[in-house]
Amino acid sequence: MRPLLWPIAAAAAGLAYASVYEVRAFTLRKVTVPVLAPGSEPLRVLHLSDTHMTPSQHKKQEWLRGLADLQPDLVVNTGDNLAHLDAVPSVLRAYGDLLDLPGAFVFGSNDYFSPVAKNPVNYLRGGTGGDWRRTRDLPFDQLRHAFEQRGWVDLSNRHASFVAGGRRLSFVGVDDPHLNYDVLDDVPADTTADLAIGVAHAPYLRVLDRWNSLGYPLIMAGHTHGGQLRLPFYGALVTNCDLDRARARGLHRHQVEGHDPSWLHVSAGLGTSPYTPVRFACRPEATLLTLTGIDSSGSLI
Image 1 (cartoon, one colour):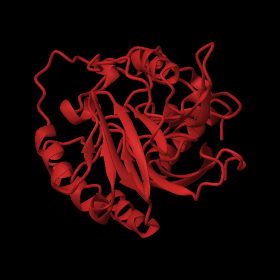
Image 2 (cartoon, rainbow, N blue to C red):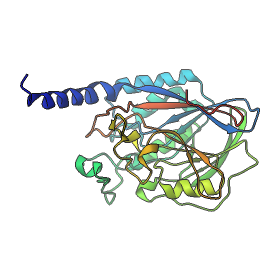
Image 3 (cartoon, rainbow, N blue to C red):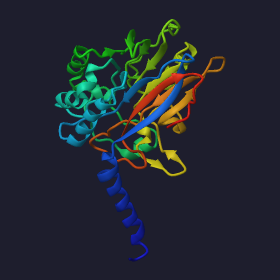
Image 4 (cartoon, one colour):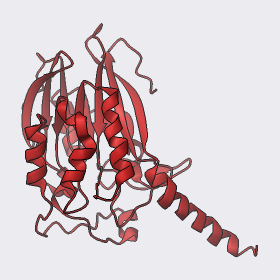
């Protein structure tokens, strides 16, 4: 092969891998989070995010249905479920028996606005490329109603508490910070609960800072797709928000000066926009978080 053709061949092979294999290589991550009171029995939380479902994505739907076999104590869904006007039935079938478990959810921009083609160069430069002046055309109210009918709790700019796995959990949530829909308050975390959790779609620093300063030990978010495109020894190219690239996915700490650190879990998500169906070094994922007592090891599994 001529030397000039090597870069072209390598780029073509990389694109084929990213768009044919990796984008469908669904992966279950497992993480241990030492966040409960010492001596507590473990609590298992399944974190779903950024499914970006279309009706034709049968492999993704089948894989998601299988997650019910994990029998988690709690499901937390951090938004961007939809990528098609007719995707609600597909989402509900995919989540299946998970909807019968205790659950909480917030929405992201792609639960409200259908996907559109964007300039990928602008995205990689740090611009979001979104035009949120459009009419909200996705059936988010239908999806919200379906989730709530099955017992999941809407945390969009709300507080809530309920029992899961025999523990009383307290929550605060916001509507999507990426759209500036978030409404933050100054209500401290409920220290009488077994655990207080903050839930957002997009992990913007203003939200993380507020919840850490209010004493929330665990914060969960999605939105970043883990960068979607990652390079070896470099990591995520972008996060699509003001969170640093080093925390684009996985379990990390977040701390405002003068406050105890919170655990932050950012899901790399399960999907992509239909207009950019590629992932590289960043497989689509759901995460099973095992919450343990604070005297337990916090290493990743």
